[in-house]
Image (cartoon, rainbow, N blue to C red; front, side, top):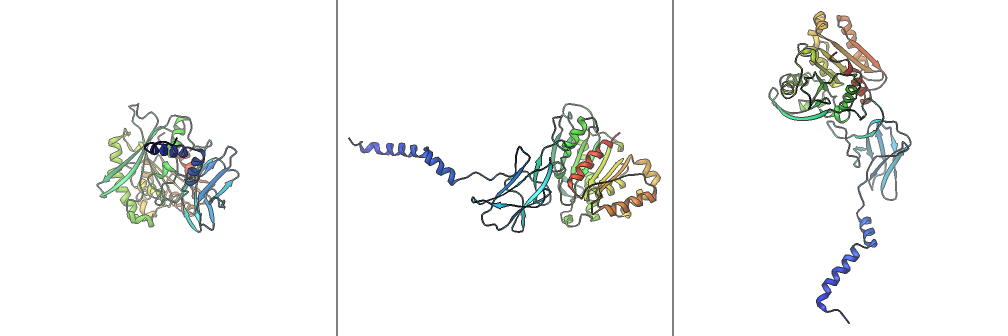
Length: 370
């Protein structure tokens, strides 16, 4: 007997539902909508595979701190390459598609900077910057209006492990980034917070608060990191807005002997210029691979070496043997020596790169506030 017409709509719904959840229908749906391509994949045997889907490309490369490697296109339109062995470390890399470099769209870990063009490959190990099973500090974010320069600014503050539960006051380190970076680079790529966590846990460094502010208060200065006007604007913001704000919101020890400033590359220029002109506020000054200032910019410290030496607890300068700034660092140190200033100058292996600067922070921080 045929079913009554009034039951046909219900029967149709049942048939549709059965088809929808059948294996054939599920396979068709999966084929129609594939998941996103994830990259990179770190394999148990130490290999690392990079992948990207780009249908019409003619040549695709991986470039950066992992080296330069050609990718091969699969039948599914996914380009890939597997590196046979990658040592533990933090690597910046980009994907180059027919001559245009982009971040890896399958990787959410990006290097903070002025322009986002570098992805991060992190292969955990046992380096000074690795995340270890130790007590960890906290990274705080602040956006603020800097009245001295009438600009909206950003900064990050690191507080050491135990800060929230203690009543102790802590010394302060100002940590500056380089020309192509931002206030977030020392945490996002330098892993300064993990470096300090590990040093503090091992008893090698004193617990400290770290201020990381943006080194480009004048936006147009991004094309000229040595611009004295940019350095002066940063000095005003730091001394008249950022530092007072940090001292108001956080438990910072008073006194110049509890203040340090250091930076890398352009930030090295900033730390040397500001630090040596603000010795009433900083007793510890350092520079990593610095774009060193003109001697005239620090002439007050140079012209009275006895007073400068009396005020400074440490002047620490470091640069790599293969760094393009080594020659001018040597000239700057020679000028310090000629004027009778006391300093420590370290030359290491390495280029103008983050692996070198992470190591310098791990060497510099234990010297502070002793």
